[in-house]
Image 1 (cartoon, rainbow, N blue to C red):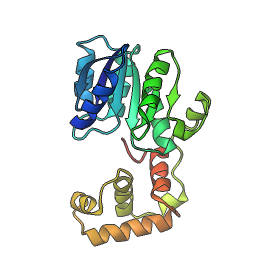
Image 2: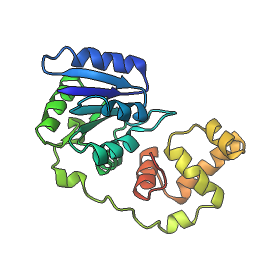
Image 3: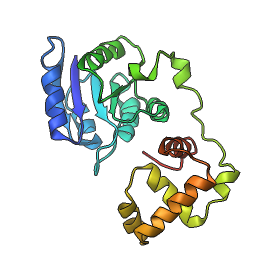
Length: 215
């Protein structure tokens, strides 16, 4: 099987290449630092599987490229490699055309088994998420209407919410919106109270379900 590795960290690409090329039936035909590079490699080499990081700033992210691959190279299987353990990330990846979702914290054997399973036509989700069938992961892909809690937010709070969900720091949000860090902290506090979120995970899931963010 021919594989491509796409990750913005060179040390990760090197480690994956070392692991994969140690297998008699796997060959790494190229690696890329972002989605655009990965897609160009597909036009040059015969490829069976792409191991795709989800976020590769500043280039094209893994989900966008996964969608392009599923449209232009439907025979190629994409496995998303991610550090995110929230189920909404898994569902989103599958909606974009991924055939697997494996956590970067998983053992090597999990990834190697996933590669072979997707080539056999299986949908592969990291064991951490439990033993669910494909129907479980395809549930609830359509956006929900924004509820009354969201309507309570001010215009500025609605601008802050998706930036928080995308993982920007208080300082980065302040710089993007031209406000102070203290003001960002106040907005975040108001958002959590008005939306009755108890954790960042809840805020993230809400943002993804209602398509407030584009990964």
